[in-house]
Length: 232
Image (cartoon, rainbow, N blue to C red; front, side, top):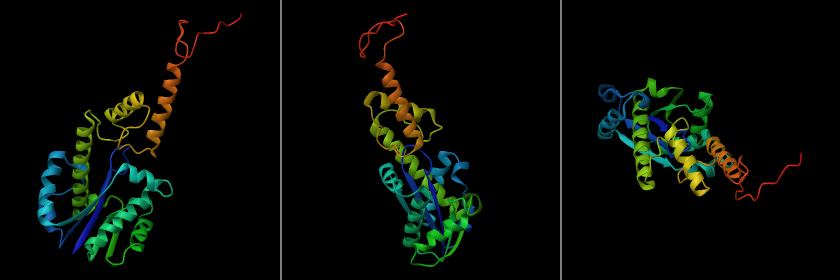
């Protein structure tokens, strides 16, 4: 049996990291489905393929929420977090051969770290962009991405306002966090407080609050107190 492992949500400032593993006897059925790197597919197509993949393969998945990520990042890094959960899923499936999308700049190091946490000993292929090369990894990327998208939908529904994709380049996400900070003075739920984006938004929010308490330019008194006259 062969297995592919990949993740979705490594980089976002908001929402979970989802790691998925897909195991099949061979990848011919996945090739016939037309699986591809999830980033190259529309959401509708990913969701269609998700159902077919689950019918053909054994699927395992783990969801790591923002609070868990922040806690782990206090003493570790994101690569080690992925190593940990990649190994957990491989242990569950115990395939004969596993294909991994390497998160580390050094492919061999990432693969070695995963192997060190395994009690089983599958043949391992660990490469960058494995989701573009191996259908079984493409399938895992689809499973992970569909799950994360659905979780983000649930978070948005629970919050009751648009939150966007959770990525720092998404203006909807950034505006949501900025507005929440202004209204409450704290980060919204499901935001990764250890991320630089979150820290920067907190700093900007504090500066904005300080500015609000300063005297206005036209000389009217504000909450900071009456404006002092400058002797000339």
